[in-house]
Length: 143
Image (tube, one colour):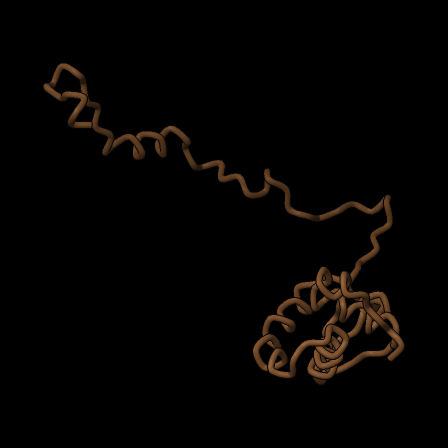
């Protein structure tokens, strides 16, 4: 690996920033554990950092939009992968009707019940209504 970091870069870059630089230079997917070992080596950190910080590194990678998780524990840069969109058209799902043909679709008028009386429904709704007057002894504290 020919990637070298200055002391200032080692202090200021996050694990995910260094991982981005590594993946950009190698231009191939890598297992997360192997990638983090390269990050630690590049930052001149002790080996015990791997065990203590692998969880943090994994969280950074999966939340950073520059990376994509792949099968088998691999990750790569998202720019190296294009989304594959598959559009399937099934002619059987659509019915084509000529413009001059009449439709037999139900309309709102078809569902209207002429025998129903709207006034009867309104009376039933008001049957249990109780009207209270302020003069019946209610105070503001009772409300």
